[in-house]
Amino acid sequence: MNKGFKKLLWLVLPVFLGIFAISLTNQADAASSGQQNIYRLYNPNSGEHFYTSNTSERWGLVRAGWHNEGIGWVAPEKSDSPVYRLYNQNAGDHHYTLSASERDGLVNAGWKAEGVNWYSDDAKTAPVYRAYNPNAVAGSHNYTTSSSEQNHIVSVGWKDEGHGWYAISATGSEPSVPITQDDGYVSIEAVMNLSGTGGYHSKVMINSKGGGTVASFGIQVDPDNARFPNQPAYLLENIKSNAAEAGPVGKEYLFIQQAALNQDIKVRLSWYPDQTLKGYVNDVQIVETKANLTGPFTFGAEASVRKRDESVDAYLKDVTVKAGNPNDVNHLGIIKAAKDGWNNDDFNFFGLRADLIKEGTVHNSNDAFTTNDAKLYKPSFRIHGTANIAPGYDWDTSFQLPGGHPLSGLAMVAQKQ
Image (tube, rainbow, N blue to C red; front, side, top):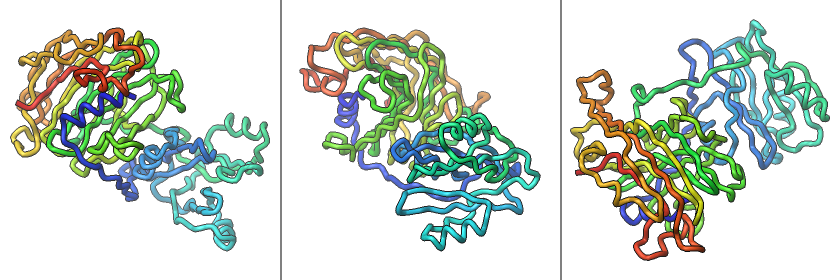
C-alpha cells in the first residue's frame, strides 16, 4: 500500500475522522418486483457463511473483512413461509431455519432469535440445500442452491440435511448503476487497464480539501498482501486526518475481491451526502464504507509501485468526473478538464510519469446527461514507468527522501480554481 502517498495527501488536504456507522435498515434490492436478493458472505477466520437480504449489513461485513460471495439465491419479498435467523453468542454462529419448532428449541437452548430474515418460495421452485458439519463450532451449517456444492461437501464429511427452504431462482443479478444514474454527490470513474512487475497499483481519487478524508479506489498487486498475495485485487482506501498515527485508526484499507490484469475494467468511486463511500466495478457496487468528506473537492488518477526496479503500466481511459451542483460554491470546487492548463509533469516522481493521451471534452448541463447538472470531462492517461527510487525505500517510506514525494505518477483530472 502506498502509505507515503496518503501521507502527502494528508499534509496537503485537511481531513478529519470519518464516521463508522452501519445502518441496519432492511433494503431489498428487488422489492418492487416482489423478490429480493439473498447475499452470501464468508468469514475466513471462523469459517462461517452468512446470508442476508440487508444490503447495509452486507457491506458492513465486507468492510469488517468478510468475503463477498455475491448472490446466493433470489427469495420472495413475502410468502406464507418465513425463514428465521438465530445467533449463538458463545460459538459466534448463525443458524437459519424454516421450522418454528426448531427455532423455539434453539431459543430454549440459549440461542438468540433474530426474527424473520427472508421468505421461502411457496411454489418450491428452486431448492436451497442444507448441510451440517459436526466438527465445526462456527459455520456448522451451509446453505446453497448448488447441487454440486452440496454433493462435494457431503463427500468430505458434511451431513446432508436435505432442503432448508426454497428460492424463486437459484441465480440473481446485482443492480447495475451507471454513472448517469448514480446519485452520488461526487463521483470519479475511469476504464482501467493495468499491468506491471512486483508490487503496483492504479486508482481513481476523491480529495476532500475542505475537511474529511482522502479516498481512492482501484486495483492493486502486492506480494505482501496476506489475503491476495501476488494477485490483483480491488482496493478501497479511506484515509483520515490522523493517518500519520501508528496503527489502523486513521486508515482503512479494504481489499474486496480478486481483480484482473491486462483488460479494460470500469472502476468508479462515489461519495454521498449521508457520508457513504461506494466502489463500483463495471457499474456494479462491490464495496461500501463511511467517509466524512467536505468540499471543495479535487479529483485525480494515480499509479504507483512498491519499490525500486518494480514497474507499472496503467491506462485510465475516459476519466469521468460528476459533481453535484456546480453552483454550490460552498461545497464544490470548480471542475476543469486536464487540457485547461494543468501541468502533469509536476506530478511525476521517481521514474513514474503520467502522460495525457487524450484531452478532455466539456459536456454542459443541456447535453444528454443532466443528472444534478453535472459536467463531465473525459481525458485519458497513461501512467507508467520503472521506479528509480533509492535502494531501501518504498511506497511507504518515499516521503523520508528530500522533497517528500510519493512513489507515484499522478494525473489531476480536476482542480479547484
